[in-house]
Image 1 (cartoon, helix red, strand yellow):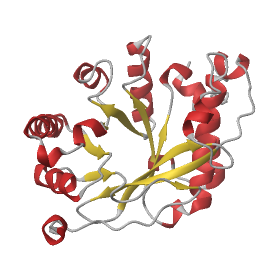
Image 2 (cartoon, rainbow, N blue to C red):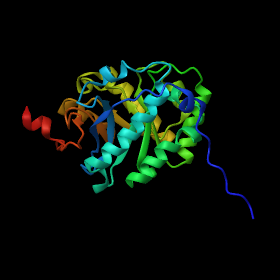
Image 3 (cartoon, rainbow, N blue to C red):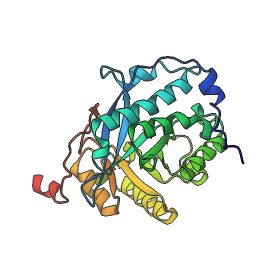
Length: 263
């Protein structure tokens, strides 16, 4: 009789790092499918327990406790999303993570899996996103995380695309399932030919690579109409809804003729 396969041991960082007792809550912002008008996913955004800003929470993160912080964020995101009602529909949950806080993809995912199982959230509804604004000490390690997460059935996303350290080079290295266009590329998109040219080229490139594009930071109907014209299907921004503390915000997708009607 063969012995059972052992579970991965906790990674060194999770086991030995500063176990700061982070008290966290989450706000949620929808990522909307413009074809259906329904939420594709909700992004979990860290907040303090009384709704304090993300900056006030992140200011507590140090080299010593970032492992504990990353783990605490995952747990809080899942638990808060389930309490807020994400299981009432098919929308996915997008969680930001710190690649430099993951020593071993298989070991460091165990608490996430345990939390998802305890709350009844299917793991194939989880998306893990990381930002290209974070300087990566070991890109090969990050690529390994992305590949392992994809094998486990999670979605993967590269956030703030076009604003950080490497841009196209990161996409070539990691090939995430999704990229999120940085809001600075989206701002006044309908009034800027250079921005439209760049975004259209990125959308075309991603279609050829099989990477889904999400545009974030949309604030005007004009920006939305320009993105629709380029074939961008998934959008996020204040035009639809601001992040809602401990709840899934209601939203209404403006129709394509919204700008003309309001002119």
